[in-house]
Amino acid sequence: MQGSTSNQGMFWSQARELFEQIVSWLDSDSICVLEHSQIESKLLENG
Image (cartoon, rainbow, N blue to C red; front, side, top):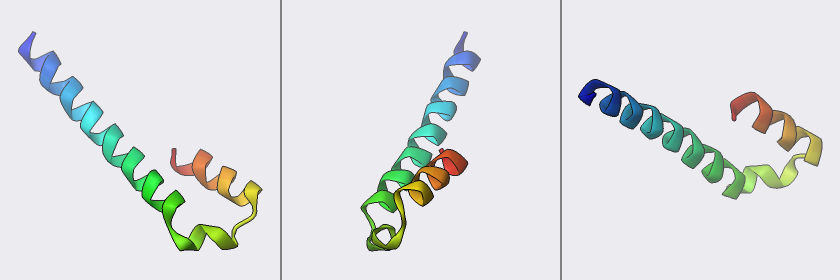
């Protein structure tokens, strides 16, 4: 059972890291020049 718990922890850690990268990107100034559709496409690609 311990192995399963550590695997879940690693999964959630990776998912959280990706989430934080997406939030950081959405909060950046570089997003201001993009069209709504471009933002959605990038989120689908990376999320």
